[in-house]
Length: 280
Figure 1 (cartoon, rainbow, N blue to C red):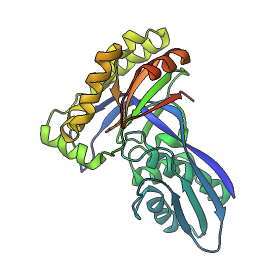
Figure 2 (tube, rainbow, N blue to C red; figure 1 turned 180 degrees about the vertical axis):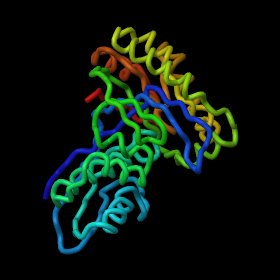
Figure 3 (cartoon, helix red, strand yellow; figure 1 turned 90 degrees about the horizontal axis):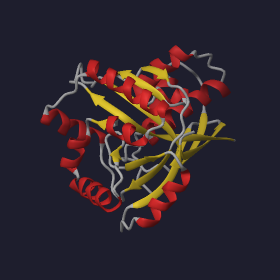
Figure 4 (cartoon, rainbow, N blue to C red; figure 1 turned 120 degrees about the vertical axis):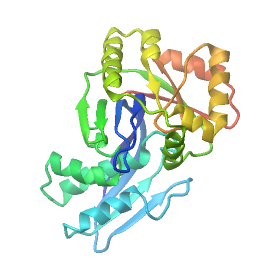
């Protein structure tokens, strides 16, 4: 049985356009971070997918959907056990990562012969965040998730504030459509370019000025506690926190690992968990 790691992601920038054919075009700058699900895979006489998780995972999930798509064209049987460490419904992309990493590995161990373009087409059918995990590196995502550009290396440290509850991505996008404040993706591309320049310069305050998430308002309207916690911690420590993806994890960005530990000690958050991670 092979053991593989599926990393989480955070969105340093996320702009979302008006829905087109049931999907929202996006532009996002994503970093891959050191928080992992662990996936155990082996060839088997019968396909079976099992989760080891303190969170409830629906029977129809990203990995089961992936296997169903693959089995339409390939004959194989596999046993998959997924040990969940990335909380679902937090904007960290755990389910998408599980599917993307599983796709890569099944292609390898069963010699399916799929090239990157083939893998991307399959990944798109599972979810818009799945293609980025085929690359496993910080990147810019455009269109409906299928256009992925690898970024220059940069390394940051992050403090994640993780709630006990989850926020459904569909609910956030439904609320986003209801609000109707759609982003300008052409303007967003320029903002991402400027953000990357600031990242190269390493000026955290300038980086924070350019970071953005279009889904924040929609998420806060669904779960106002997230906004309340964000306002409280920013007021207490004078450091900006941001929403990842559709929420509800909040995170702050740092250049030095020691800074994360200092802030973590100062924060008292009750039910919210504090997690230190870094770019990988």
